[in-house]
Image (tube, rainbow, N blue to C red; front, side, top):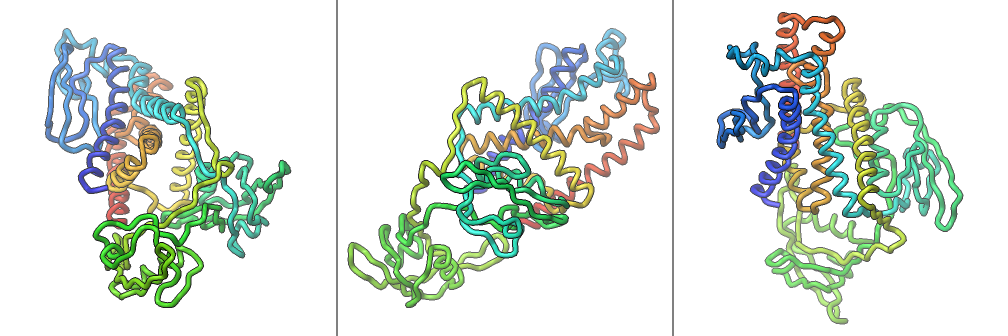
Length: 451
C-alpha cells in the first residue's frame, strides 16, 4: 500500500476514534444541560467549521491527533448571567463525573459495535496444530510433540492461531508456570503439560510469543512451483514463467521454498542459474536478483515470484457463524477480554515486565491501519475496536489532563463535599501534562526507530 493510502486510512481510523470519544462527552454534556461551545476533531488551526442551532461550533482542525469538547465554564471566562445555569462548573459533581466518563464509555461502546459487525460477518482461523518443537524451548520442557492440537493455555481455550497468540501474549513478562492443554488427532483425551517461566521475554522489544515459546504450527506445504511472476521483475526479465517448477539453483537442490528464498536473498546482483521443468522439459534459466534495501537497512536480492501453496484442508480451519444476538454477545465478551488484556499490559509496563519499546505512536498506528485496511474490512474494523479499547483505557488513567484525572478530582470532591483546591489542581495539571508529553514523546521515538 502506498504512502497516500496509508495516510488516508490512518486519518479515517483516528477520525472515527476521536469523533466517538468526543461525541460521548458532547452528548452527555447536552443531556446534563451544559452549553457546548465547540466540538473539535483535531487540534490547532480550524480547517472546516459550522454552527448548529444551539450555537455549538463543529470544527475539523489541522492536527488530527486528538480532539476536544469546549464547554461553557466560569473558570475559563466570564459567563452571561442568563447562561450561568448552563455552565459546566455549576453542575453537580455527579453530572460532571458522568460527562468526564462519557468519552471512554463511548470508546468501549464503539468497540462492542465494531466487534459485533465483525462477528456477524463470520470468522475463521487455522487450528493450532504443532508442526515442530524447538529443542530446549519452553514447549519442549512442557513435553509438547508434533501433531498435537493446542486446545487451551492456562485453561483459556485456543481454537485458532489468533486465540493462541493472544493467550501467549497475555503471559509476557510473567514468572511462574504456563499450562498447555493438548490432544492428539482423532482423540478426545486431553493432556495438561506445564513448564516454568521466569520474567518471560521481559524487556524484549516486539516479542514473538509463538516463536519464543518454541513452537512452529502446521501450515499447508509451499511447493517449488511458481504461481506468479511479477511483470517487469528480475524473474520476468530473466525468463522465469508461472508454472515453472524449480529443481535446483547453481547446482544446489533445496529442501523447501524457505531455504531457496534465503539463498536468493543473500545473492543480490549475482547471476543465478536456475534449473526448472516447464511443460515437461528441463531448462536452465539465468536470472540476476534485483538488489533491494529494506526499511531496516538490510540489502537483499529479490526475484519477484510467488509459489503455489496447497490449500488448507477443511478440518484444519475453524469457521464460526453468529446470529445477531450471538454476535453481540461475542462482541461484548471480546471487548471485555481485550480491555483486561490492555490493563494487564499497562501494569506490566509500569512494573518493568514489558519493554517501553512496545509503546507505539501515530506512525505505527498509520502503518497498521493501512495494512489492516488492505487485508479487508473485518481486519480494519477489528483494529479500530482494539484501538478504541486502548483509547478508552488510557483516558481512564488517573492522570490530570486525562478524563481519569478529572474523575479522580470529582471523586475526591464527592467524598469530601468540596472541590479539590485550585493549587492542587494546577500542580496536578503540570505533572499530568509532563507525563502525557513524555509518554507521547517516547512512543514517537519508538516509531522513528522502527522506520
